[in-house]
Image (cartoon, rainbow, N blue to C red; front, top):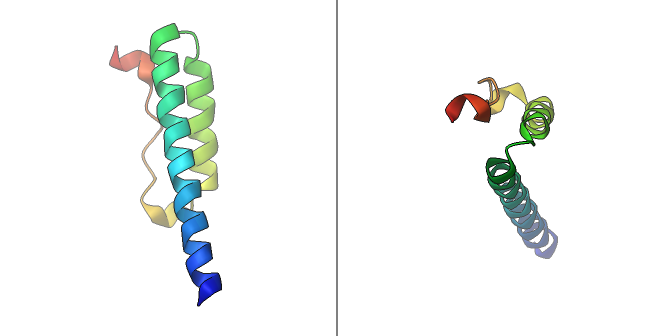
Amino acid sequence: MIVLEFAIKVLVVVLLVLIAFIVFVVFFSGMSGQSNALIKGLFGWLNQIMPSGTGNTQPPINISQVK
């Protein structure tokens, strides 16, 4: 049971770090405006990693179109 609790804590920390990294990259590219290719590459990379069963089937968000 101790191993299971530790695994859950590690998973939560990894998810939080991943979300924080994505938010930071999106925010940074919104300020500089030159990192749109990095954003597209990051979202494409995440879409490849994510299993198709998680509902992550939408195309990556193009930030340059939102502005």
